[in-house]
Length: 466
Length: 64
Image 1: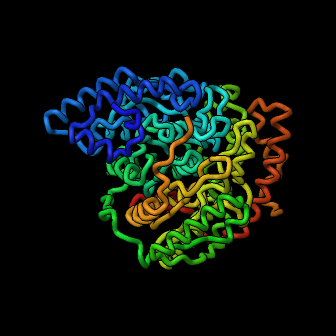
Image 2: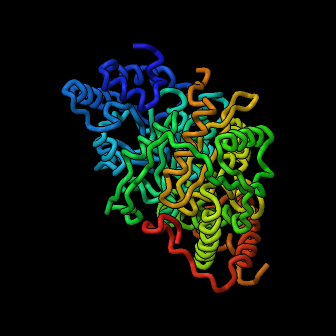
Image 3: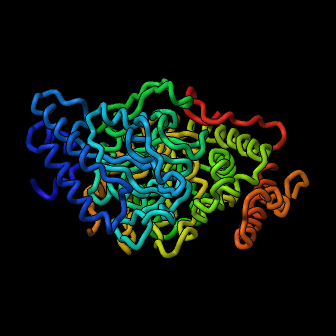
């Protein structure tokens, strides 16, 4: 088997399985060997499921040989953020508090991955309790950026993005409350897709903030991310936010001629020159493909970051309040500080946030009648150095005004479908991301534009220098 | 700042049940000053009549 196999796209891998040109067992073994070789450098995983992964791969191989694979992910090695339960394994959330917490049952995400035939190779690293943007926590070694291990992978789903970028997992499942799928996807140069909130069940996922949390997926191509989403989406009565709406995706390959792309330019002032130049190149490419790019003024969006922060702080602290009282020193300093912040917000102030949320949602609903989707840089620059700490991420949760944090938090605040795709590399060789945001339940348009851009950009083949 | 929002020291006093260190106290006071300013601006934006979103609505697929 070629060493190149670990870099196949999910659809490419499945085609090779169907042609009996590759064996799920060989591929899984190769991936586990690669994880073993790179784990100490990159720290992507908190647990590697070597024994069960090989067993699952053998079952997948038998199904292919019998001509009856389970589904589109059969035999595909994937990983899940250590926020999702796998029966009999610990769900630690990279915390000290849950260091010994063993799950009794599979999360809905894991159930669906198993039903699709996926091979679970491990549980990925994250920011402690999925509550921070860097992926750097005091209790475990951080997941590092495969493009330069001195830089953060981005939080909170750091290990998922890094594992996919490093060829240690063909796909991965993460979650976001603010930007925890798209930010690490952009920093690591992979695709991060968060469907409309409610598409994928959160049952068996440790919560951060109930009214904001959503499941998202990672892959090295848009088609791969779509396959992951397809396998995971569907109604689940165990999750009160689960939607009954059917997932309808148009056939891929359709062009984007005539689509209206709105650009909230007022919020790009603090985006660095390289990220901005890469984004302008994207807009030119979309224009050449026939899309109509228009400036989109969104005045209420200047309150997005603070609204998201107030709601997230209150809800997250509500979940953690007992532990915060009993074991405050078992949290990392940054997470404990955020939890104290939530404890200092009154009920009336929390509701002020929820009231602002309604106004921002109304503005977006109106804007998305005038354009088909929004485009922006995913992050204001490439991944910062781990040594430069939290401030270097340039997240501005309490700042009101025309700054970029509003844009990255917008789709999770409103539950809208969103994707980050690679759109360039900095002079230092670090990836830059493009964020697209669509109307509720219109994953089809988001994926259509992302696919069209990915095809002309040709970035899906780039690999980190490992 | 509107008088109906707590001051930063009052917010800190509301956390007396937690074992907050002097260093944390300083950091929190600075954050609470920022929070109070943000709340005042948000309050002016929202006004008195807007009803709260109830959170994510799975039927609408967005915050409602």
